[in-house]
Length: 128
Image (tube, rainbow, N blue to C red; front, side, top):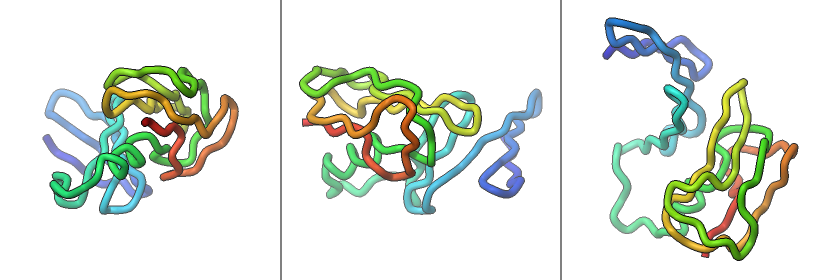
């Protein structure tokens, strides 16, 4: 696979048969990458420190990776969710960006509403 930087957080990814575009946003220590309809969190070391708290992981996982508009909120406080459930759907750069539950839990609070513009790194949902 060949990855070519295009500038402004865009990259061309070629596997020989086809070319696709990936977008990256955020600081180098925790960069969000949008590729093939999925969102990935890439840390500078490639893996998380063992001492990292679950709260810090949740905060990153449940935050917007870039400025975006909230397309839908699929949960409410008190609701039980399973790992992988789509909690909030964002829209940015003509792409849908799902914010999914990083673990099983119960929704403590929701800090966004449909149509609202949210900023990168700001938590949108808090789990208990």
